[in-house]
Length: 625
Image (tube, rainbow, N blue to C red):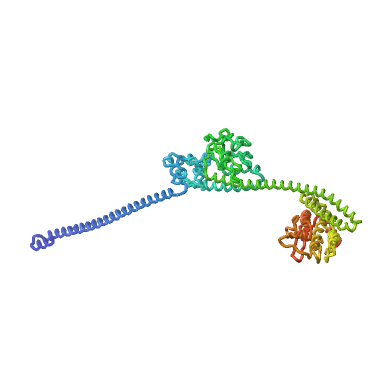
């Protein structure tokens, strides 16, 4: 527009050239100004646009940070709630304690285990909860934590609001703020039942060891009381033993430990369980059940002498040892502190009572057995004395009868000879019976003694065979001996060994109608010492079910044997007992219809020679060299 005006003015001639130049300069200056203004406006607009973007970015960043913080606070709140819920639902006992011992926090398990409520906890110190006998140890742990240590394992005892002792095990550490202890944190587990089970098992093992090494209740009782007191936490005790009919009970042992005074617990040496005075042992004997008195000073019916305040005992437990439905003994324990009944202790007491009852059963059975043995020995002695006396009384007239019969047989009249022989034969038979009974009674009564000396077994066997030949009486029986050459002598009782061989030979000949009877001696090839003697026959044999019975007194192989073959059934019984006296074994091998072999085993093959044989072996070795 301005240029238009200038053009118009020039065209109209209103301006001169100079003025035109001035106007041109002004116009150029104005244009420059407008351009600069335009550029400035553009620059300002650009800067305004950049400022808005930065402000928007800043606002966006602030919004993002605020959202993150809100989200973090929400997550932290959820974490804190989850952690608190975790602590509250934990079965372990969790606690936080201030440096002065005041309890800051406990979880639900802690409060339920100890019986405290929230109001109680706010006023509690940790030293109010720890048992008095464990507080000193607790203070030591606090000092370690103050030094920055972590206590990875600690066992202590808490006391519940009801006074019950709770054994806990756990770990403790400290939280520090600027180098100073801010709190003490602990996690514990209730191990009361576990410790009770361990003590019960330990008590069972200790009781088993004590009873295994004892021969009587009186011997075992003091150690049993000490074990029970140590494992179950009591301070003193008395062991009461009832007689078999339950008419009286007496204290057979007492024990004092754990700092208890011992003179006041021994009690009366003997009391009547049905008497008027009532105390724990009498209650237990009357009802057959445990009696637990929490505080003897508050029990008016408990009048146990020396068990009250004068002896320093406050609590008493008495439990029975039941035998055949009746209390055979009572174990009474005392504590210096009042103790409330608890199931683990009663369980341990019942277990201890059962173990002692088994021991009492065994001891009484042994006593009964010893008493029965004494009675049997006395009866056997009386029988032996009677038999010895009667044998003497019978043998004297029988010897006279036999003697006079022999005199009559020297010049018999024909009509009297048969009767006289019968008198003699029957007299001899009765004398053999009496001698056998007398020999057996002497062996059983222990009055038979050994007379040991070197014995030439070969000569003894041959002498016995010559003596037994008369028993064949013309029957077709071959009687022989098989004896090794150079048989070494043996140490034995020659007379008793000969009696055994005679009995075995007599039986073999008696039960063999025809055939062979052989005496065979077996020797050790290395030493030539006799190891076995066999008497073998080809007679009737012995049934398998009678092979042990024939070694019993007055027993034979069958009910008709005595009628058919005669005999008293004492020979084998005497022979086996004589062999046992000399340290030998008598055995039998037999087959019905084919014969029998009786074997006397002197010693096993290769065994050490008997006394007296060593010198012979040395002489034999010297001669061979």
